[in-house]
Image (cartoon, rainbow, N blue to C red; front, side, top):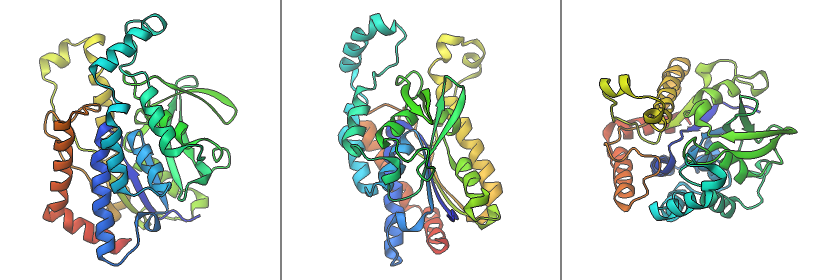
Length: 318
């Protein structure tokens, strides 16, 4: 199976909405050139966390515009408001203690089950690679629907495992390759899964001889600009770092992979990313103001001359 053209999708919680709008822009650029939709132009789709949902959604035949509407319509189910969180926390106080995850995971599981039902990885319409991490064996888990050992796994469970961000959602229990796993967010392994996808494309059975033969579209969810001042970084302990450290690790991972991919692939590498205004960078802010802000940012990015030039070059390469 030749994997020369790669689509890679970052994690980022509710900011997956940004990725969906950008993918819709790519699809419009393809249509303007008389070319069919996204699935016809990529040999491998990789996703981490919220990117796993988008990747599997695309491979399930759901359009980027429909996925964007899914984020908008189901955001309060996935990330319940304060009252819902407090009620859930009260019910989990005895079983989970005071430091339980912010959300109980019931909402996201409900949405994923509704979207994917009993669909298995092997029933998806395109090759996908999804990242997660098993806390029991302390090893990455890379789900691949072209691996016979993973074909019968339910898509909703794989997406749930990949999006179990520590402090936000509980780990997801799954049996993978005969082993019991406690799976957490793919962002712990690769919030930007591009390097994993490139490695997969360069396997001997993938029929790609050189990374310079690849065409890679790596789609972000917006880049944080909120700084942590020196005094805070020097004085914070475990309690203060508990939530910010997740964001810092995900961001550092994302940027380092971008650098690696850019060096490996050269002019066949395309990255869609934009700086986020402070206030638009939370993983779970589902307020109407934040959602409108994210959508405005995504649409403005597509109108930039540099973006249009990049998309034109990408379309030619695809």
